[in-house]
Image 1 (cartoon, rainbow, N blue to C red):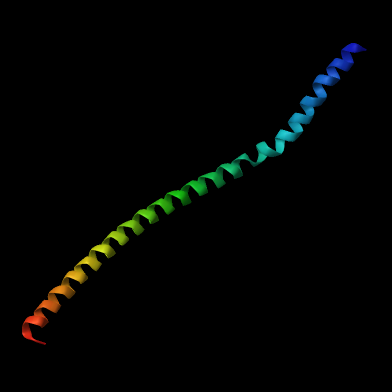
Image 2 (cartoon, rainbow, N blue to C red; image 1 turned 135 degrees about the vertical axis):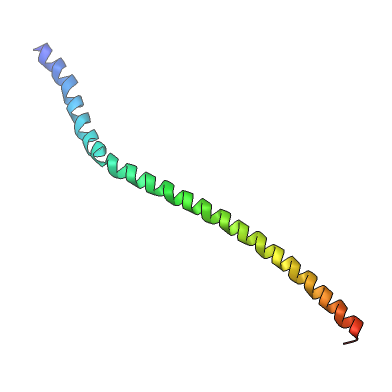
Amino acid sequence: MLKWIVLALVLVPLVVLVLAVRPVLARLPQLRRAVLKLHRRADEAMALRAAAESLQQQAEGLQSRLTTTEQRLALIRARRGG
């Protein structure tokens, strides 16, 4: 009789564990795809960030050139008296 009680105390939790883990294991492929999709999106976001930083630097360079051009134009106008 003690043998059956010990066996039940070991087997019942194992069965409950298997029943609890089975749905998670069934969803692993979906979870893996979701993680890969998130990873791809993170890579795309990093690429977009790098492109935005590059564009920002170009805009700052153009702003600097514009300022220099405006200063030169003002000097030319001042020399002409206009």
